[in-house]
Structure formats: C-alpha cells, structure tokens
Image 1: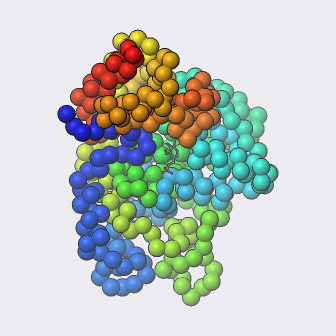
Image 2: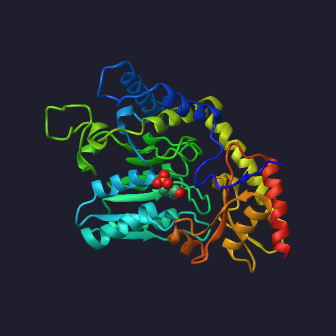
Image 3: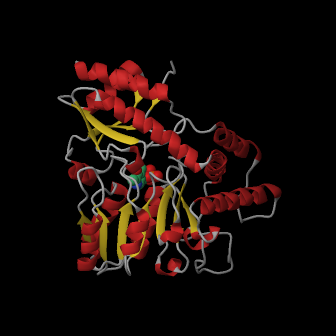
Length: 383
Ligand SMILES: Cc1ncc(COP(=O)(O)O)c(C=O)c1O
C-alpha cells in the first residue's frame, strides 16, 4: 500500500511528473539570470525557457500567438488582472453561482467600491449552467463582461464553453480555467476573450505559476496591476504597451516556469485525450462504488462525461471536516473538506455552510486508490 492516497489534485496536483522535478532542480543548479535583461549565457537560457513555456501554453489552448499569454503567479492573480484591469465604474457583469472566491471576491469588492453591477445566474443543483437562463440574463443585463467557471472545483461540473461563447453577444467572455487547463480541452478560438489558468493543478507544474490569455487587441482595454522593469524599452518611464510586457513587470518565476514547461511537455507527450480518459475511468469507478454505500450523498452531475474527476460527497450525520480528518489519520487518504473557497457554489448545491468532502483524482491516481478509498468510506459510513 502506498503511504498516501492523494485525492486532492483539485487543490494542487501530486505527484508531479519526474520531468518536472528534474527541470526545477536543473534550473536551480545550472541556470541564473533574469530573462530579457542580460546577454550572458545563463540569462539567455532563462529567456529561452520562459519563451518556450509561453509557446507550449499557447499551443495547448490554440492561442493565435504566444504573446497573448501573460504569466502570473496563479489563477487568482490572472483573474484579478482581468477583473480589476478591465472593469470601469458603471460596467455590468454577469457571472455564475458556481464561481470560486477568486472571482466572487474581486467582483464583490468592485461592486462595493468601484460602482460595478454584478448579476449572478443561478446554476442547477448539480452545478450545471442553465443555458436558457443565461441567455435570458444576457438579454436583460447586456453586460460588458461574462465570467464562467469552466469546471467547478466543488462538483467538477463542466460548462460547455462553445455554447456559452455563441450566446455572449457583445460581452467579453472571461473563463476561469483553473480546474480545466490540462484536464479538458480548451480552444480560445471558440470565442474566448480572456482565460485564467493555473500551472500547479492539471498542468502539473509547480506552485507560483499561472497565466492569463488575452485575445488580440484586448490588451489596450486592460490596465496593468503593477508597473516596473520588463527588460524592454528601458529608456522610457512609460510602461510598454505591448504584450506580454505590459502586464509582466519584475523578475518572473523562472524556476517555476521551467517546471511548468516540463509539465506541459508531459501533457503533450501523454496526450490530453488519454489523460481525460484515464480520469473519466477513475471517476466512473468511484461514482459506481459510492452508489452502493448507504448513507452517502454525492453532489454534482454523477456522470463522468459531464464532470472532471472532482467528486463532492457527504456521509449522513458526519461532519465533512471529521470525515476528512479520519480519512487522513486512519487511511492516509488526502482530501479537502468544507467550502473549498466557493461558498456560492455550496449555496447552489445546497451544502452551505458545512460544505462537503471533496475527492479529486489525477493522472497519477490508479483504480486501487479509488478502491481503497471506497473501502474506507464504507467503514466510516457504517460507524
Ligand atoms: C475554480 C477555481 N478558480 C480559481 C482558483 C484559484 O487558483 P490558484 O490557486 O491558482 O490561484 C481555484 C483554485 O482552487 C479554482 O479551483
């Protein structure tokens, strides 16, 4: 038996592919220099790594050019850049009730302090987006920005992005792809204007990496969150207006990006379709097993086709925090209890304020992890 059964990949993926660990070590051992700031060999190598990571990420989401990828420290920073950078007093925003606090908190702040009006489209109890309701709300509100969470971090529920993009009208579409990048296909040419990604979940990179995809031309509408050195146009006190420099001030996380590049290469080599199939298989196995355990309620679609490998559940009469603690203490199973930073989503699925116990499988999880988890849950449910 493995020491840990890791079912917390929605928080951050583990283990990382050996190539990622190696790339980080290799960078720290042999590379230094700030990319774009010097001409010595190690600085050029750092520049090359950052450039190639940008190229790989752009290719993964079919971005027209890698300049449209702005690196950030996480999805939260990417979402803040999009929301604070884009929205102006008087703007109207439509978002869904499955949003993470990385969207809901900035929107709440902007509502209170910047005169922005936010309308939430209530999702169904399984977390799915009612497209008719969305269409109606878009007609009524006529927003400048529409924000959707591609895949819920609470229920795994997937939003059909192509259909949403088709109905957005003149609104710009910001997609929170924190849970989907590296797990589901993302094609920005479907009409996605802004996509926030994180590097440390299904992209299999280190923490401290993330990105915002900005569709061509939109950069002029977005104010940077910070200004400073970019290594370009150093003679001018004016921040460069071109991508990605407009939004990338200061020394980037080169070590992290070296790891992210290896994560992206791993995904390319393995194939996104194969990763998805593997995770769908585990989700199916888990859902089937859960259905036969008395006292367990599963939230979400309950259908591997309509969700990622995230599964939320509760055991009747048991506190989610207790269940998570006992899973860890007795069985070495790592999960995430509570609200998972998404109180609006829990209000939607009816589990607020106690939340759920969330399991999230990854590419390195196997059927035996799922089976042992089912045994543990059966025992806990019987107590
Ligand atoms: C749906 C969703 N959005 C945003 C975030 C924030 O991601 P990060 O931790 O990279 O800032 C998360 C992380 O859990 C998430 O699940």
